[in-house]
Image 1: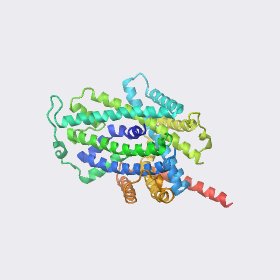
Image 2: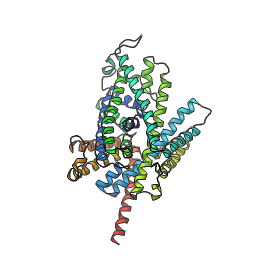
Image 3: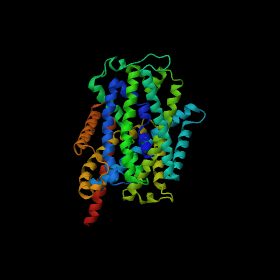
Image 4: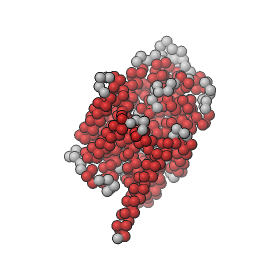
Length: 441
């Protein structure tokens, strides 16, 4: 279940629909963009897996940051990640509602949002295993869809499909070459796709509630990262090989364009169903992850203690309700003011994922030495080429932030996210100062 959670949590609408924006700026070079972004995500997951296998905790990287850097770090990364999840949750609920409204126009969009939120709130309140079962089947459908796409694409490339000529590999080098916009296009592609890898972190949060956390997280991290890279890079390679990169249209899923070109009937409807499932899957995962994160914060005195109440089945119901309540607020803002209030909220979490990843890397640098010194037997999963690859990942994150600052489209996200991060850090600092002042008194 955890392996499928790792696959399902990150295979979302960003891949099925959003990848078109990356192809537009990088051409066939989008394959290299995904390799770079995927390598960074794999490094982060390996670091997170190392710490989570050695010290399983429901708060995952928030707990690790606190142990490595102090309470301010655990408080900051925990609340930032919670805010990120409950805001993105609104985008997913609204996107799924738009698709459902297209299928059943008689039901208003807001009603679909309400239905989805109530269903997944109920599932998350009932039992932990419900979340796992939902995610298992959601992920299974998405994985099946990508595998089927890869198989059909390969058959088209080699001309095995009925009434088709071999496509070959001419589109990789034709139409302006493999890098039609040069390496600048590849870097722009990285900016367009790197955030699609967000969501993997929920695996380590869920692992803490499994029967064997150490073994579960190690196995899930090992298998998930390689398969995700294979699915992402493999499907991009098929897309830019089967069709010229210039054939992709803005707002249309590249997967639909390819399936249409090789004669798959009702390709648009099929992919709409897959995207719909992907959105609901991400909504479910984000609701779970946000509730466990705020519960972990409450356990450490960084959130109201009222959130600590747990049901007989081990579900932190008040934490679930608190997360879904803010999720409902976000959805209302998205439906009522998508281009003003909600846009500012969305921008304010645009680069938060990178800040979270950076704190994961810094925490791993500190904790690895401590674990090696105090309990080396806990290192059942080790970061590759430590500490050099950890430092390289940090440099890569800084480079992406620098690129965002120089990109007109990404700059507002970076500035708003930096503002939100600065506000949370200021609150964390004030809390530390107050505790220190009470201690001295």
